[in-house]
Image (cartoon, rainbow over all chains, first blue to last red; front, side):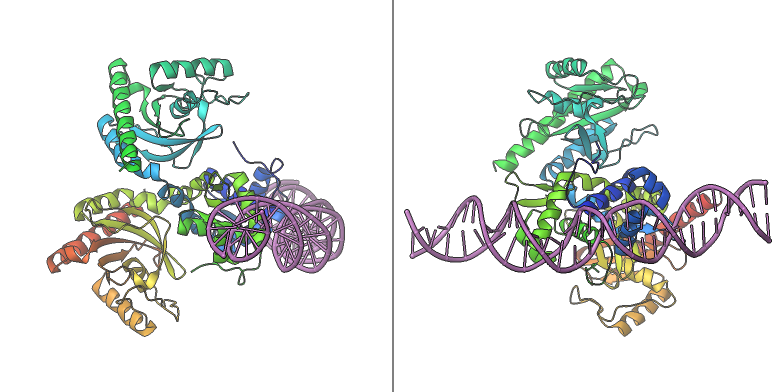
Amino acid sequence: MDASEGTAPGVKSATRTVALLDFFARQGGMYSLTEIQQELGYPKSSLYALLRTLVQLGWVETDPTGTLYRIGMRALLVGASYIDGDPVVGMAHETLDWLAEATGETVHFGRLDDYDVVYLSSRPSRHNLRPVIRVGRRVAAHSTSLGKALLADRPDPVLRDDLERQTEHTITEPDELRAELRRVRDRGHAVDREENTPGVCCFGVALRLRRPARDAISVSIPAIRLDDAREREISALLLQARERIEYSAYHLIHP
Amino acid sequence: MDASEGTAPGVKSATRTVALLDFFARQGGMYSLTEIQQELGYPKSSLYALLRTLVQLGWVETDPTGTLYRIGMRALLVGASYIDGDPVVGMAHETLDWLAEATGETVHFGRLDDYDVVYLSSRPSRHNLRPVIRVGRRVAAHSTSLGKALLADRPDPVLRDDLERQTEHTITEPDELRAELRRVRDRGHAVDREENTPGVCCFGVALRLRRPARDAISVSIPAIRLDDAREREISALLLQARERIEYSAYHLIHP
DNA sequence: AAGTCTTGTTCATATATGCGAACACTGGTT
DNA sequence: AACCAGTGTTCGCATATATGAACAAGACTT
């Protein structure tokens, strides 16, 4: 899930630069040199030079005393541009709005990247109790409906040996996960019953814009608001949303 | 506006790494090694090593042939985290929604950084003709209502000698800009009449959460939909929105 | 108020990177 | 089929960075 230094030869300080940005992005908040050094494991003096460079460039900011660091304003643009440049996210935009409206629940758009799902777009519900996931966040694929829907679309999904446990319901045995993926294929959509976040269930389907699929959409709903009827309703709406996106993609490719 | 290499000593490849990310973020799209080399001016072989490193780490992606580069998924999270970690943007969220609803026009939240305004949040209007600015984008302060509102709040604003011309209406003379900032102070809000984008007018006020102010909000509207009555209406709503944000900030600090 | 601990900062040198030039590929042209 | 122009890729040496250890500056304890 993370990109450690040892496995990746390359330009060392470039690797460390992005590791630093990634650290700030994940943790959010302000950190001292020592805290960063403990987290990343690089020598203090090297970090010091790196941080000074990034502060000078506006990618990292310090507090008035100059000893606490956090992400800077220049880093802002970078994330937005990945999304803006992606045709699929743009195409799905209206349908995601529609699905959020139709279900009244939180809707996500995610993409598979190695063993993780990356959240590219989200529509938080208006309930006070709502699952919120920051765009750009990486989550282990096997614990989410998005990830399971995407893995199920692969003829031979590559699974980690060590499937990280997120909650007491997370599927952590590769064989068990493979059985679950077969159920996903039979059922037509993926379900996550509090496997990633306690109290939250998700329903996901993969978008068949390419095979194997890379993108998926999901509806997340607190378990407390869920019953059988609601579940059938949501999965039906989810399938409709998929149709809409695939339809508009088709007409984009064949005008 | 940009951070060139010559002015900034520091870790060279860290500087280049973020310059590369910034380049991809600004341009959006895919570029060959040669194109990037022409734009940034670094030696081809150095760029090659850098790009390979960043591709390996997922911060840059290539097309199937491996010769066209674009921003990668790992860069996504970085931008979102600056916004999420900022208390003012979070606090303004509901009021921005309200202002967008009340005016029916595009609403922006921006922050002054040196000579530029950085857009931190936006509510695009639902008109077909709507001004859209990507979050994270930097724009020369003197050409925007956000920037003029913020500069007007400083007792002694630092202005560039060379105020870049964006449109035929951009104020490019420092003395003329100083006179305009006095008008902003007298009037109580800043106006941009097609000074940044042809056909688009903006109205902005600075948030007085600290002095001098750092943040401002604005309403952008196509000149074609603007008349005197509408202008009075919009500036009144803008002032109300400012009150709301300052009010909630006050109650956040003094609970 | 001295001592001790923690954290930020500087420095000299071993080490990794940056660089230009040479090489390899590709697609188009004669 | 040979040539050419443009581009991506590799290589060895000059150069810049990374590093541990030493130093400085506070903060807390006794």
